[in-house]
Image 1: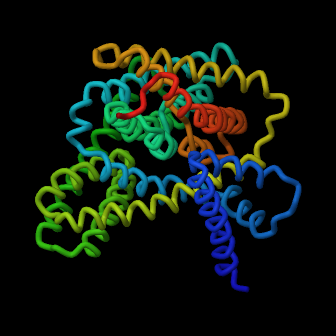
Image 2: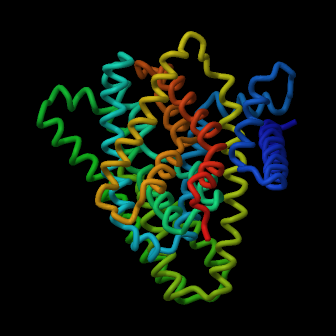
Length: 407
């Protein structure tokens, strides 16, 4: 059999398993993502041989394929789809809270986790702040697939979606700075701090500009057509084009996708989309997002077999506590101006700050030469598993206890 055929069959087997799990989970009204992670864990840790699954797992998780699949292929799809589903006027109405969480909350969490893991766990500065970058953002894939379906108000759903759409891009920029430039900037003193701030602004502002420009241009294109298959293709070209063009010129591709998607959904839909086209685009991306999410979370569960947790349990426990407490402090200070958030809503936003596959993909992208890579992988996987399984499974009961179901 040709090598390509073998790889195709392996991926097809994984997809078949993933879709089957999703079907069962939806029938029993449980979160798809949690079920997929648990099945992936079961398949990844059992001693019973599954030939095609074992081969697929080795191909995907023991190479750069996982990182490429999650970040370069699936993340633009999931973020682009999210921008199409989240009305911009809803986001604009909550802009102070979303910006506070996405900017202030992410930075506060980054600093707290970085210094805490450095002083309490003894991690070197570069390792501590690289881990902090991975842990300081709510992962969009996890949040958008679990939190949104949990039955909360439009206000909380918008805040959580808005935060997850923006702060993942910020976290990726912080990750790049921490893992590549941090020690150099520390040696430079105050000049290094200034260089770090300028680099961050270049990544963030550059990504926004790329996304807004491309979103505007593609919106102009669809004005001349009433052809939904063509306009679906245009939306795909926008999402992937924004990402890869931004990355090519060394600015944030994730931020570019979000900015471009919002322009396309708000301005483009208003000037160039019929109702039929809007429905067709949303339906198309619903299907693609289902496939992407299904594969992502099954792969996350499978990846566990490559991590050795032995002898690390105390460190793992402390890392989880640090991440949880940092989220509490960061959310408290970043949402202080938000007078419309009550105590119960803040509790839910705290517990809903899930970590997920984006953190794992970034951790796996660290080069083998990075000192402390194994420590970061162990801690990242542990926190992500705790977040998805423990926090993810308790979100719906917490919503009921707090009485925050949508009316």
